[in-house]
Amino acid sequence: MRFARALPVLVILAVGVDAAAQEETRLSLDDALRAARAAAPDLVVARSRESVAHAEIGVAGTYPNPTLAAGTSTQAAKFSGTVSIPLVILGQRGAAMDAARADEATVVLDTHVAWNDVRQATVRAYAALWLSEGAAGARRDSAAIETTLEMAVVQRVQVGAAPQLDALRVHAEKLKADADVIEATAQVLAAATELARWMGRPEAQGVRATRDLPVPEAPPSLATLAGRLDASVTVRREQSDVRAAEARVAREHALVRPGISLDLGLDAFDNTLLPPNAAPGAEPPINYRAQLTFDVPLFNQRGAFVEREKAQGDVARSRVQAARVHALAELMAAYRTYEAATAQQRTLADSVVPAAQAAAKATEEAYALGRAQLVAVLDAERSLVDARVSALQAQAARAVAWADVEHAVGAP
Image: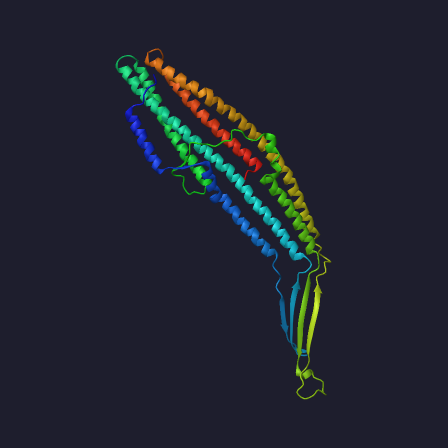
């Protein structure tokens, strides 16, 4: 029969679990994603850039200030004043604001791209934490079994039913199992730290995953997902950059149009300039002036600026095609990885782990009856732990692969 766990071991484990449970915060994958969407450092930076891009619209629509001029002279007007008012009336301001709005739309999509990346990283970190916790649990179970097995072997050695070598061997296996527990526990903290980073938390103490790692059992077909790639955030971001480049070309064309300025002024002359036959007490006339000034685009028609923005548009169009190619490659690789991990996980969970459990139980019973060597029991227990950890790894690989699928199609 299978070896029963000793009461002292159960007490120690129970106390450790209760103490840890009081400090742990169990988070589901949805909880982690909500926290990441609210506080992930990369998203905070991306949202700050949105504010800058929105302010650029106001900058682009800023009117130039009027110019005031005042002067005097000794031979003509004792005071001259002129105000020059720029007239932005030929569409330059509107074109500049349209270009700024197009740039803002691209920056907003940059935030969506950042979230797509953060979401993938968060799922990966959560899967790593879930896996490390499961592996640590398997290692603790193995250590408890090794402790119980050592007690049973020592009793057999004391009554002469087993050689002294068995006691030494099982003690060495117990020490190794204890070391594996220490390493697995450290891996849990490392994985929790990585997850906390994407959640925007300053520390990872007590961050733990739930027992469930959601993975779709009946996902859409590869062809269906491939049809969504043109709507992915990475492709849409590059398409938005194409539109922004076109808007900047329109802005440069608008800036070729003449700049107009309205000048209004007056001249107040000195009394000495009155004619000799002027009536007593007469005041010299005030001369009023008005004129329009045109900026003639003779030496600078912004041709180089237009060509630069057109070239930027060509680069953006190339990036659109590159984004489609990269997204399709990522999707196909991730989907095939998901299929392989799914097949492996089902085989391990449905066949390998139950077979390893049955083999370990049968070997333990045979050893208890003196029909098997201790090394066979240790090998069977090791195989069982390895099978359990492999099943956990396959499940985590499924979650990571599906996160990569969602990243390729730009899941919201």
